[in-house]
Length: 202
Image (tube, rainbow, N blue to C red; front, side):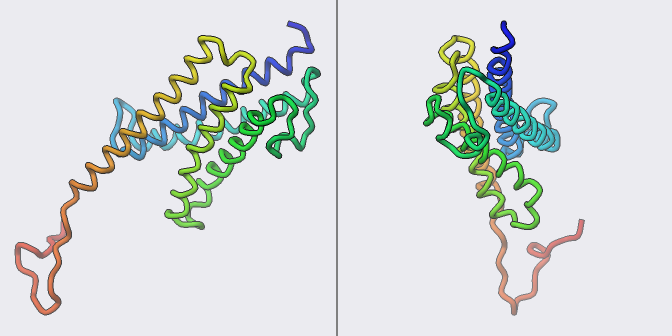
């Protein structure tokens, strides 16, 4: 490997690692939403991993893009790392990567803004994580120079399969939890509660 190839190697390595961490963040977040522990991984642990993976993915994504500025085989300007479509190499797919990174940043920042924006807006922003994951997958598969290799296809395939499977699990468990909740007992205001309907302090 020559010195000129080093920026490309760094960019590709950090890009793949960032994608794996993004997939890990998605998986950990979905495990939190299922409200069920998986083996030794409990809810609080999943939240910690979710945030750690998300932050680490963003940090490596920043290195991934910055390394391209030093790649002599392609002319990449600094502003093209924040404006989708300006990178001359496969602009549609590199643009998808830029957009995915920006959505990732928005979702991560929403962690700290949850109290200010409210849980409803926070949940809506978090749905954008699927957009970031889809964009990152498309970016890696279509813009990556080695994405056709069996090992690379295995990485993308495993990540997409895991996220899709856990999304289905989340939907099923959420539906079961909703059905399992007892219906609230309604009482007329002019009728005193009986021993069967009154709440007993724990």
